[in-house]
Length: 238
Image (cartoon, rainbow, N blue to C red; front, side):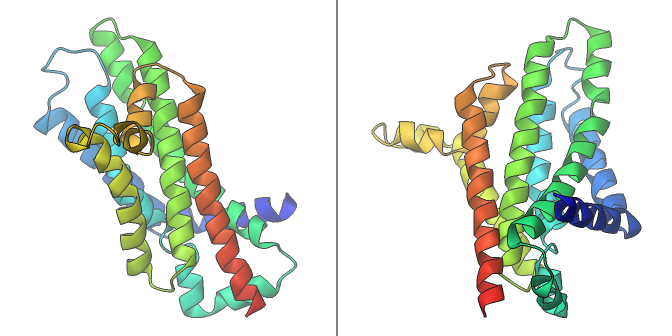
């Protein structure tokens, strides 16, 4: 665990020593404010719920999380520093976990900074905190799943652009499919519905804390982190 923590600190420090955190976090909060307070004025609507805020947060995660994770391994592959890393007495699992936890920490920071929305809405009316808590849990799991996908895609290519496009596409397809279930054949609907990110996130954002939704996201995280570990093991063997 000491190696994981060392890599975690290194990656997290890199986010804040460079411009990445100071670009990603303000952009996320700025876009959220523009779409929630100007394009869809949640205050003027007079509805004390977070559904529209949660939708835009999830949508912007599709764009911003690939930007956070795209350089995790691809940049080191491009510069050649990954070759030094794989020769150190650090396991591939420790490398992946350290980088992954650093990206998740940055995502959790954006969630923490967004709590001004439910706090403000609670001052305007009777806000049901059950769906709020469930929604934030869903966003944390969704963001963690997007991060795992991004880490995995960054491990398979030395191009940050390719890593971004791959992770964006792999996140977009199961997310957008949840909004197109009405065109899915009835026989396929239960299967397609279960593998969509939106379906599980929607359940949690209603305040329904179902273990099946949590298991789904943790399974996605485990699969893609395993892909990243496997890619690094292949590199070490080469």
